Amino acid sequence: MKKQHLSLIALAAAAAIPGQAAAKAGDIQFKIFATYVAPDGKISDVKLDRIGLPAGTQTKADDNVTPTIAIEYYVADHISLETIAGVTQHDVSGRGALNGATLVSNAKIVPATLTFKYHFGRDGGIQPYLGAGPSYFIFIDEKPGATTRSLGATRQKMGDKLGAALQAGVDIPVNDKGLALSFDAKRYFLRPTATWYAGTTEVLKTRHKLDPWVVSAGVAFRF
Image (tube, helix red, strand yellow):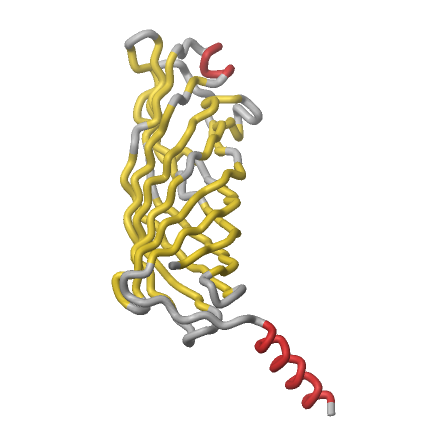
């Protein structure tokens, strides 16, 4: 009896989700997300050090939540190309010998990304997907933190960097008009270089393992 009850509950839950036609070639889908960005930021290499970083210095970029928009075009019935638009802001703080020190302040990142996605699932049902593609991180308006300023740095620059992204997610239909709930996760892989200057002279250059997790939840509308 318990198994029969569970089966009936499962059928009722499936029936409660309104179906919508599967996406076809030429369809466009917009998504509006709240996005959690969790970068690493660890130093992978010190290329130049003229300000005397203490031995054992390590770094970590802080997390952030930001709105993002995704635009998706279906090139075939189960295959789409997606790009995202958004800006996220982060500080980079010291770990180890400089634990708690601020090294980079208010670095804004535009994560230009294009993923090639394959959608699974049956017509009218939940649509999980997998994707992958290139990314190009553009850094804007970053500044040296209080600690690196005290060590003599007057300017800081993160080098724009080409990387790659892996993606997985699911679209859950809400009605038969193209509205859906969407959940998405991306893992980026990139190694940007950070440079600090005293005037026009380079005084510190480090390479970083940024590799952020980017997790999003929101709504999608397809037409």
